[in-house]
Image (cartoon, rainbow, N blue to C red; front, side):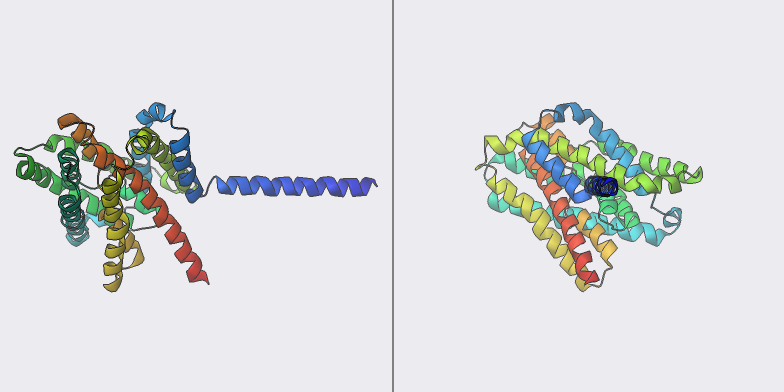
Length: 327
């Protein structure tokens, strides 16, 4: 009898350990983490105002970890710098910006909302392109160079588009430079320091976990802060949401298909899709509130939430493709 009781106790302990391992694995799963953030942001948004101040530091941390994978040799070759930079400019301004302006002209009648989409087309790519690239196993160096190129182009293109559509330059080059310094250049320099002092290999073990939970914080905050927009005027948001879906899901599929037909490797393809579908919605929303009103900020607000859904979908798609390759 004692041996049977002992065996039963050991069996329960094994089951308990197995259960704990499954729970730990679940909370390390990036899909689960992003979906959890999305659900909590929609149904328990109260804490999002408290976490708002943590979003920029979290993004800076993720950028630093992501740029650890950017090789120093990438900066020594003009070809390594120029080609991704030109692709980044072309995809983010010509392809994505052009698509937004065309869809805006066709589907949007409200002037305030139309102005909001013009702002979206004019701003550079989301700074999160680089950490999302790491998140989705893309080419970090390619995304970094493409993002940097698009931000440098934005110093000219954003004020120029403001002059064309609104009659005056509306994006201060100083503001774009500040974003570059805080969220692109500073994390890159800090990542070089971490590599130089030998901390980079030690960070490899925690890099994925820190990145996943930083994105949890960003996703929860964005969704929580914008929850009321979806509840207040759902029908009015339909054309805005349609453009947001078309400029991410549909345009991303087109870019991916074209890149695949040109035999671009899968990692660079991910970078190209992100550069061609994500705008700096925070900058666009801030400009809308500063220069116009809350209604003008709706395109940036709605697009931000759909960006999160799109990235979750890309991650599911990536995992499914890997499973199919194994079979």
